[in-house]
Length: 107
Figure 1: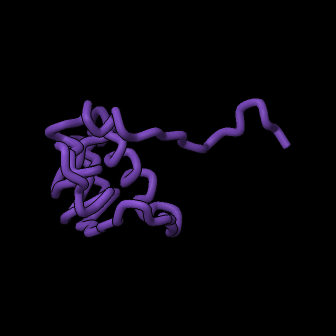
Figure 2: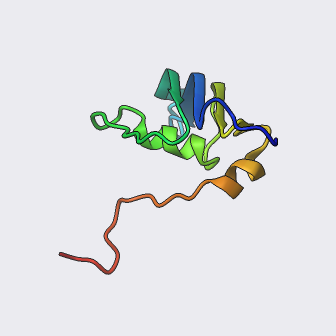
């Protein structure tokens, strides 16, 4: 891809559902919708913040865009590359640091 893409990030009807077993003897599976029908475009060179309450799908969105998770519906592209069809190309262009623990910085 030699030309500049129109969007740095583009999501269309993006979704992620987690399915897991209810446990031994309980039968069936349980579904948790982590992301439902996200439509988002971010232009190159813009500053963007992803805000929302706990459980809104922020981390799931970032993990999909960085190819750590695959979406269960919809599409996502980073700099024109589809996160499912060209994950290596996406990873070559994305750096990611996830929070959650403070490591050596305890203050």
